[in-house]
Image 1 (cartoon, rainbow, N blue to C red):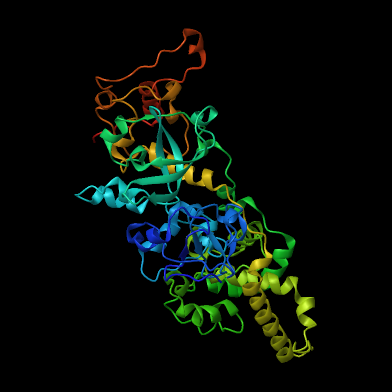
Image 2 (spheres, rainbow, N blue to C red):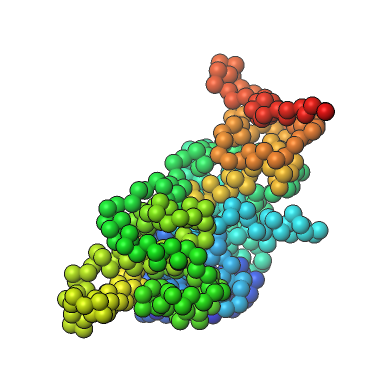
Length: 492
């Protein structure tokens, strides 16, 4: 394993940062302090599809890496879900678990609300842009007079303190048709976050045109809904005999002792009560089960569908059981049924007799071995490759265009109103991707939509007016009409 600093973050083997810079990098957001030994193992298996030996400069391509505490594989910091790996460097003794090992991220159970933006709304003192930009998160990059979306890959600070970001521009941006490379370096002064709650900031920026990531099919949203993948007869046969135990596991909590659920009958509880209780991760100590054996994400969804259908009360409590011992034990039961013949041939396997005691001993041995296989077979399943650019931009677009009480006036069609038309008179608000929450009441909407004195209106060829999208004032009127009108209450 590569030699690591206490933050489990390593720079790539090919880095433009010198050894002298490394010694002075306390202000660097990823805390580049680890040095990779030339001949030490450095296995990379990133969710973006990159894999290989991290000592090969081409594998990490100049990006920082973070190690998963569960599987010991390394991944790009910039590829992690909503930039969550960037927090590893800012927290003492922090640990990181990749989303292959932590089902919370596979099934998208995190809130869409960005904690840093929530904090800025409550704070009396604005946080400078320098501290708001985060590796792995979305940002707007200025190209000419327009701003385009990108994913932040890495921050570089030269000896004079000048800051520039390596960014990955969204591949379906108009600027890339005859402009810069998608992977490029940009001075930090030409980068902005989503400007959540910042009316003036949004009004000053003209957005360039791009194909919305939110309009593209998303496999993750399908996988997050267990009802999409019906369970198979194999799963039903493996679980139905143990329905009573699974019902008890739905009610299980880490704070209450359950003596009727013994460790030898539910091995995942033995793990939670033993090894997991010593974990530095609070979620693991509370019952988060990350071991899924050889099962693909689809097979895990099929198990969840079975639970949804057969365990009373399960559909209303998915947020509780989808990452806990209920699913963990269901996986153990499926693996025990699937590999029973192979497990029965092991030398220390008890003889399967007709007596109740002998049969119970055989079954508990099978469960024990199935659980061990579930823990150790993590490398045998095919890693899920994610379109990390699209995933990043989908969340970023939500922050850019959400119309809600939380977003306030800044979320109300404000982009470019003091600067000029968006590129090609683009109106990104006309699609519905969950952006219009409906709890923001714009009483003085005409005043809010007023163009500033320096507004630049692009000149278009009248022959091209055929497919022009409606202006934002008309979109607002259509949105108003689509809302149900309040019904008057008659006085008695």
